[in-house]
Amino acid sequence: MPSSSANKLRPLQLAAIIFLTVSGGPYGLESLFTYVGNQGALLLLLVTPLLWDVPTILTVLELNSLMPVTGGYYQWVKRALGIRWAFYEGWWTWLYTFIDLAIYPVLFMGYAAYFFPAIAAYKVLICLLIIWSSALLNILGIVPVGKTSVFLGIVVLVPFVVLFIVLLMRHSPGSAIPTPSLHGLGFSPIAMGLYTVMWNFIGWDNATTYAGEVRRPARSYFLSISLAFVLIVGVYILAALAVHRSGVSAEMLDNGKWPVLGALTGGWWLGALLAAGGMASTLGLYSAVLLSVSRVPQVMAADSLLPSWLCRLHSRYRTPYLSIIASSVVVSILILWTFEDLVVMDIVLYGAGLSLEFVTLFVLRIRQPKAHRPFRIPLGNKGLFLMLLLPVAVYVIALSGALYSSGSMAMPALISIGMLISAELAWRVIVWRTPALSNQIPVRQDR
Image 1 (spheres, rainbow, N blue to C red):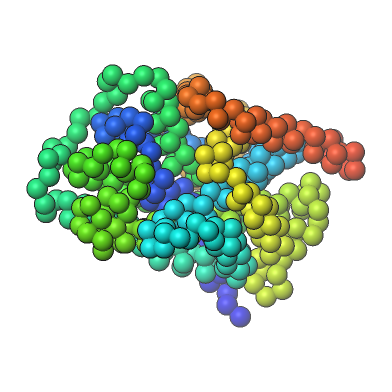
Image 2: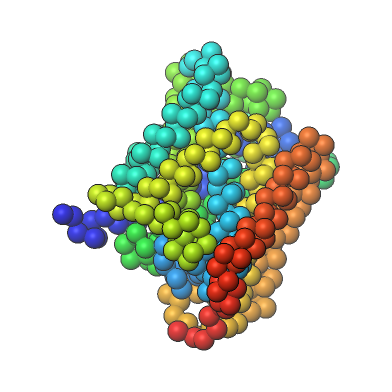
């Protein structure tokens, strides 16, 4: 039998999973150039990580160093705010991740169409094949997912490196580096561009739900998240510079996606390489995100918040196989929604769950200031509060712009609000069945 250490993730494997959980490369950024142009895209890709990602990453690192346990954000909120808010966190994030998962098979179809234009007729069948093959991989264990993520991460990055090299070797009218600017743009396109960038930068907290399955978690998460952050920002900037240098119009890029840019730049082979990268990206994203979401119902079930059978582990692989299967069933239904609707619902639910994590960080700083934290954000309480206002402000601006820009987004937004409210309804049912849960209170003493 392998040792327990052999069944845990190493930093490089963890970095690959985080890269695929959060990003999976620039696939999905194409519409950004339509909203704000090359100059605006470059500015948002430089500024948004500082306002949105850095505070989120620092929050995740401190809370995860305080509690590097399976369940991640659910366990943090439980410790700070009590079982009720922990249930909200788990419920909202569970729903958001289901929606996020449903996006990736749909994106896969778009890139696969470069090779097989008639593939749209088999959308449901192929999406189900992706969902259930990923479920099987996750049931086999976290290490196979980590090894697969390293391979898929390379497949995602290489096409953009090749694209940029080809563009550097050829003369192009857009050879100068663009000046980052949003000059002359209205609120709506800026907000929609911001919203697009945010969606391509979410999920840092998802990587903590399996912290109990990572070697030396405090050190590994710091190294892995740092590496993943540099890779993500770097490949996004590289892609933006490639678009500018190619001279391809934003409309053409939005309609044809990255493979069209590759085909126009280097020929069919480069378009095929980028299409293959897009397919690998969506597969890697799906498998990595499923890994995170399958651990949440496991720990919630252990607290009597969900059916106990979700805790059951596979006799051989020791993975929460019933939780993985249950998650896959829900995602199999959600693929019937359109890409645009799924994205709107995704960001609304994600923002609600992330806000609870910000509150949790602040509360634990006040209630347990001396608790052991291998990583601590070097800010006092006032500085911490101001730092956490930055991502909240970005979220509010982006969401307002998304809702303002198109009436077609009203229905998915209302559905998202209904999903948020469903947490309270579900909580009342749970308390009715298990009254003792309502008496649990947050931990207040230092430990």
